[in-house]
Length: 243
Image (cartoon, rainbow, N blue to C red; front, top):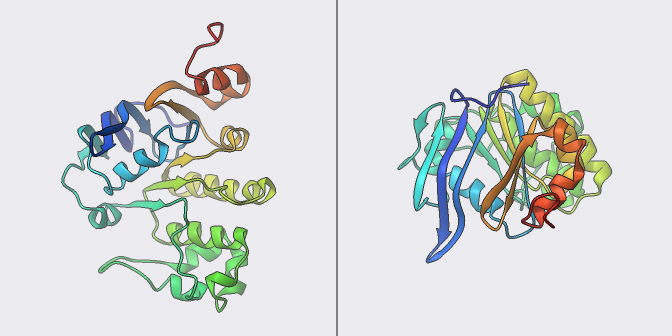
């Protein structure tokens, strides 16, 4: 299991982000190592999506630092972060329903390489859907396409926001191992926002729990699987024995 250390691929240092005068996350710190899958958990409205948007450059932090491979990303535009190897799959999947599966892999930023064969390797079912429009795909197929597009960019850091949104758990159980395998094969770090806590803990190495804009728990998933009360207490904003 990758270690949490100063040599991490992604580091957030005392990050504070908000919208206007409303602060959403306060002084949070976390790391994601190479080849590591990290779950980012917490109740709705805790600030998880805000954190991912800040990492990918869509929101400007009020203070704190975001480091990729030790380099401060302050002032680095979202498109440049993509070129540095960061890929963000939003909770809305980011698909164009009028385009076919194949056409989605032809969409790219200037100078960006997108290798559809990587997506078809990890999601073989997509290969037979090349000519189908995204709007005609099932929810699970759409999510495969969204994640497949991300993998086709050969990311160094993959940000996944609500992989399970709108999907039956059995579908998510097929997607999660693929993401895990890609991380192991490529050394890509994965930061996963997920509401299905038990699935996230099954496949991730470590987890952070965010509540009311603060990281209230950071632990290995082995420990958390064995002590579900700690997750529950963290969601409630308290500690075991104090609820």
